[in-house]
Amino acid sequence: MSKKILIIIPAYNEEKNILKTINNIKEYKKIKLDYIVINDGSSDGTRDVLKQSDINFIDLPFNLGIGAAVQTGYRYAYYNGYDIAVQFDGDGQHDINYIDKIVDPIISGDADMVIGSRFIDDTSSFKSTKARQFGINVISGLIKLCSGKKIKDVTSGYRAVNKKIIEVFSNNYPFDFPEPITNYALLKNNFKIKEVGVNMYERVGGQSSISYLKSIYYMFNVCLSIVILNYKKFGGRK
Image (cartoon, rainbow, N blue to C red; front, side, top):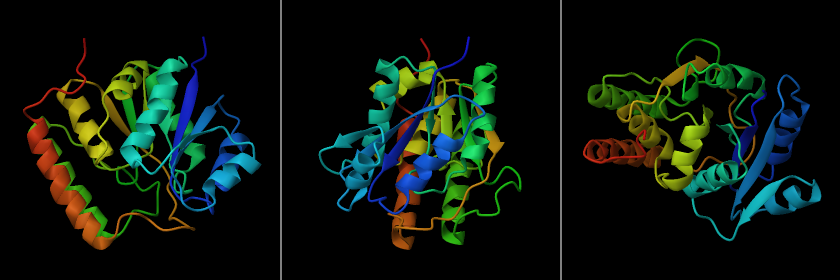
């Protein structure tokens, strides 16, 4: 029996990128995919592009942030009975041609979550800025210290999860720093996480929401959140 797979695409001010992202998904034919764009209260022409191009989307009334946008997608996946959900950025940085590598370990039962990684091998020539790589290494090291398990691309937003985690995330998903926090929470609760090498591109249009100073703020706050999470429960197995 084939799995129902949904791609969740959070988008905030992505009028220059979103149409190309959706067209790339539609052109991919290896496996059957559905998609939903979560327009996170964009103030540019993103909503107009989505409407004019007849793209399947949910329109949030104002900007709620990446965590709320992605959780909206997970709730959509849960209530519509999807078996696998894939997070996929609306800015064109994720390469759709690697999505089979991300979903295959979930289909085979080898993983509950699969992370598309820039750092596990040399598949991706684009890695990120040196400042962000430093922050990623610090967060990754802390997660290993707390959990005993290493995730190299701990902030990657190119992730796939199974039906159980769809349910967990639909009910409990952090609004701030969602990727590293949920990665650690899942490890803490004995979910199986696998990293696979994928290609990623540098953003070609629009502007990233994370500046140099925000990168430093992000790193310290993620580390603090992980320490706090050591003493809390997050969506464990039943």
